[in-house]
Image (cartoon, rainbow, N blue to C red; front, side):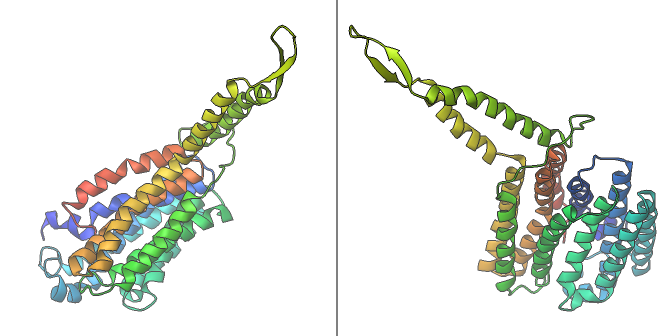
Length: 355
């Protein structure tokens, strides 16, 4: 057994896509980062890595034929060791989830069952992408459950993350053989729909100014900024009204337009620009930029290398998607922190493949 093969087996470059699930779930419920959220993140990481190890154990015969360089078929890691690691990581994940509360434990049990059933059975059936999508959605709901009862506010983000996962998984089913044009085209369509939701105008609910933390200061600042703009606009509106001035020898009244109206117009354009450059919009644009080129290349040339690149891009795109979900919930600090993981994941992916 070679210790250096474990990062490859566990696909550690994809590990950076995991914490954002729980963080986006907690943000959707309007909760701050807490110890329970940290436990949920730890449980999520363990269950994800359990799935990675179990995936290679279940596919060891297929990998011996199609990808003999993988750790198990190459003999660098024994099949028994991979299975044992999956069992241990699953137990650790459930134990950490139990520290986040009974609701979180219940969701983690469902998540673990979905991961194991996917790797052992559903993966090679038509229901495989749906099972993987369910696992990612449950991972986000795990973060939501760590804050208290799961409400419908977390369901839409979970569904969007699941839709993206479904698209990526559909493309990944062709990464060793290639030849599919329909899968990357369908993934492009799913990306467009998800991005349309992320780019639509929205107004985050106001947060209480008491006990603000970095993750929620953005939404309160946006609300307060809107109030300030309204107050600033009132004098400009008054100045736009016709004013009576007396000039000339006859003293006849004339209407004069004040220059403040021009300034107000410029301020309105600036407000539109600032509204377009919100953290949610920027994160959504980053999501589009990460997914669209590799999907398009795979559709134009569905070779195994380009298909694998499309899968890698889809996996990394989960980070800006999670950031967009958190930002739309008002957790701007969380979105910024997640966005900082993107270059790290990209750099590590050059050394260890996420697929």
